Length: 430
Image (cartoon, rainbow, N blue to C red; front, side, top):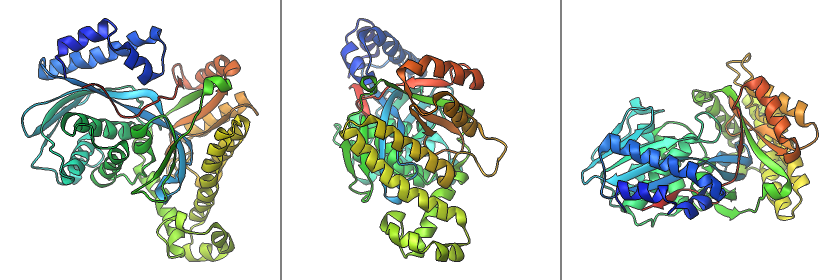
C-alpha cells in the first residue's frame, strides 16, 4: 500500500493507465476519466478520515443478466456478465476493532467486530450487508480487523445492474485484500455476499448477481450445486458482432419491491413441493407437464404454474444461448434472448408489480424497443424485474436512432451504452 498523496500523483501521471484500460475495457483516451474517479474517492476518504500513509483502492462491478431470468434460486443455469459501471473504494486498516464505511450521500456505517449478530431493525440497509459479509469471513477463521473505507458508485440503484451485489462483493474484496492476502476465491466472496443479502438484509436473492460481479467477464453458471457451481467463461465480442449492449432505465425504481420478488421463488418452490422436491431443478419437466391439471387443483395458484413453465423454458434457453455463442451463431443467440424476454413477460410475470397495475414503465420501455427494433436485435426485462430496467442488444447502425427515440420518451440519459468488463472484484492498488 502507498500513501494517499503518492497514489494520487501516480493516477495523475498515468502510472496506472494500463490497469485502468484493462479494468474498464477502454482506450488510452478514456483513462483520465477513470483516474479522476479514483482521485475523487481518495479525496473523499481524506476529508472523512484524514490522509493515510497506507491506502488501497478496490472496485466491484455491476452485472448484466443475459440469460436465465430468476432461474438461479431454483438451482438452474444462467448467463451473465460484469459491466463497466462499478462501486469503487479507498480503504485502509485502522488498527482497531471498529469498521467504518462511508458511502457518498449516505451517513457512515459503524460496526464493532464484537457485535456481528443479526439486527432486524437494519434489514434492507447497507450496514446489514457489511455486517453479514464480515460475519462469514470471521466464521471461517479469517483475521478480520477494523478498517476505514469510503465508497463511490456509478451503478444505478434500482437499475437491475445489482448495486447491492456489487457493494457486497466490494466489501468482500476489501476484506480479502486488507486481511486475507487475497486467498479467498471470487466464488466464495460471491457466497458471502448472498449470505449477507439473504440472512442480514432479508432479501431472498439467488447467487447469480454476486457471482457475476465477483467472477467477472461473461460467465455461464450452473447452480445445480450452489456449494460448487459450475462456472465457464464465454466469449462475447459485441463490437465484432456489430452490436451494442444497452441498459435502459425505465424511470421506475425497484428498490422497494422485495415482497414482489419474494413471490417468485415462493411460487416456484410451491410447484417443486408438489413433487416432494425443494427446487424446480429437481423436478422432471415431463412430470410437470403431465401433472399440470393436478398441480392447479392442489395449489389453487395458476401464477405458480406459469412461473414453473418459465423456469423450464428459460433454464434451457440460458444453456442454448451459451451453445449459440460458442458456435458463433449470434442470430440464434438473439432469437433465444428474445424468447427469454417473452417468457419473462408472459409466464414469469415480472414486468410490472401486481400491486401497482397502472405503473408499467418497463412495459412501455419494452413496447418502445419493439417499435424501434422490429425484428432486429433483442430486448427483455432486465434482472429482478417489476420496475427498473430493460436490456437491449442493438445493431450499431441503429444505435444513435435507438438512443434518441428511447430518450425522447423516457428522458435524456436513460439509455446507457455499456461494455463487458473482463474481471470482477478487483484490487487496483494494494
